[in-house]
Image (cartoon, rainbow, N blue to C red; front, side):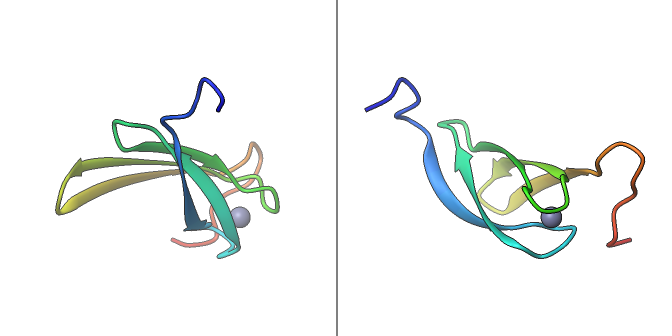
Length: 67
Ligand SMILES: [Zn+2]
């Protein structure tokens, strides 16, 4: 068991290119995952049971596909 044992792997779909990737969520419900295909970084944070906030950062010099 690593020191990041509290992190839980969750399947995730890149918001930008819709590639299926894996993210790791910590105990506070925060997940940061970088897409290995398009380079987009997605940060998701569970705010409440009914609210998940997702921030999408396109790689430098690019813009997100989904507008
Ligand atoms: Zn992607």
